[in-house]
Length: 329
Image (cartoon, rainbow, N blue to C red; front, side, top):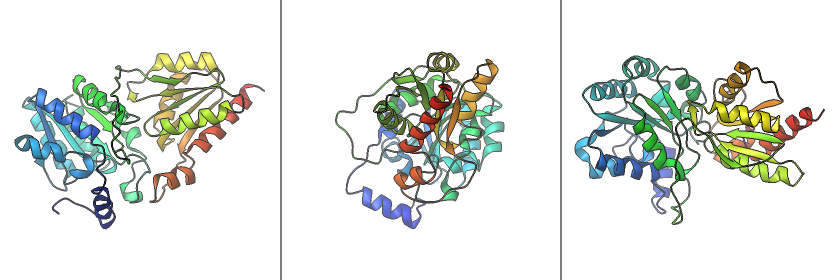
């Protein structure tokens, strides 16, 4: 096995080989590349975990494994982009942002090149602990001029995310969570609109704005809240930059209470972005951020970690009841 795999990753890879997992992002990238010869694929020695093995096998002349060298990979991608290609670069979120932030700013964002940075293992949801957890990456990437930041909530939006990244003329950070269950035959691709959130559920008492895997947790919380008489609107916010300011302000006016939810630190991520929109508009309302509370976490299963660090549906439920209570005082 030539790819870089820890013992835990290798065991996980072997286990998964007995039940093929969806490769919705990887398939979407290959299909896009078959239509657009400018697309090239770069990997930092993590090809199967980033779903780029099909690209490697079917389009080998446009696939480049640069090895364990993320900073160099960004530099290579910048050169390719200056030469007219559209590079998609791949690694884990923690590696492809924090390890090479200077290269991203100077060799992709400053010249406003179409370098598409794709990270897997978002937030805390990994067995591999702090070294592999990306709880600061959204804060970093949304601070970079010219950078689009996109986190789809499910495999249904992976094709749309690739299409959106291609349409953006500059650099993009695409934060991906690989599905953990076998393919669903009924999976129907959904579309995304530039700079727009998706209203998944409507309610009049509180608005929950979530991104990534937290959208599913938010919908579970909304159903539990409904049993107590609290009706929640749930917004899937796949585009963290540019943000849907109009929808945020509309929901603030409609429900008068708001909770943000993210698989990320509460500092600098989606919650901070939404709070900035409200503050700039002079809107005050009961507001709470659900996310990692300015601390490092640990490795474990997604279910265990979300519960322990207060990112699961129960934590969202509690936050919503709190802001609704404050609103009704």
